[in-house]
Image (tube, rainbow, N blue to C red; front, side, top):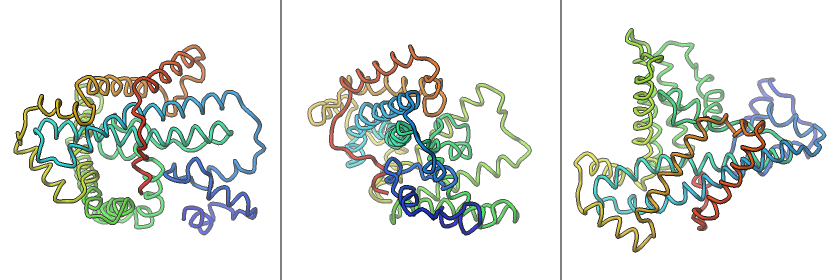
Length: 347
């Protein structure tokens, strides 16, 4: 669609070479779940003569390794915990429900950004550059910033092909807010014809409109205050995690039940007994919880230090070598190797 729209608008010349056009449509690294590439970024690369570049090859392999780490060490391990709690939320202590809600936020980020890293890395080993799809979204200080950092390729797609054609911010605030609601509802439907996705999209629309209304008041946030920034990051993460409940739950009813149990502080079983139950049935004991927590901290420390796509390691060969060895060891000793597909493969 983006190719057709860009050609129609005159922003991109039609591709006359059938093979190159077919390669653009079926380029395997980003075919299944993105990044959703614009023709302006990728088509010209297929016309270029590619020669082997050791720096790009090593950089691509590092990204593939990092994406695999996110998937099998963090995401798939957290999925054991999250899946059980979401399947029967009525059986568990409200602390377990809260933990599952927060851990699903990390799970889906590691799952999807891990896939994007593997896709971008695979393309890079062959000399092709795909767009950055994630840029530390959970460090966002507001919901607008979150959507500028999360699944960037789809966010900009909806902005350019839905929000702006609807009028964007050119026709007054009321129409702008209506356009935003339309965009988020459509983004929910993009994930599937289920009321849960519509609810998820509507929640983000409410968050976005509320933030813009607050931003337009005289009492603007103190963005240079460190404590205010930390508070803003935490609030944004909590709001996003709350919306993920509807995204993850099988139905609106189940999502509402989870929220009800959380706010009513449901206590059907002691926390320790629940951990024992996990240990017996799903091998997710306190040690696994500690391992998950440790690697989540490592994940955010590294991603906060490094540039998007781990580019800071390109100029640090010794650090790169140590990093790669440690990641490989973490995957071997702490990876969860089950036939678990990426979450976004279903969309």
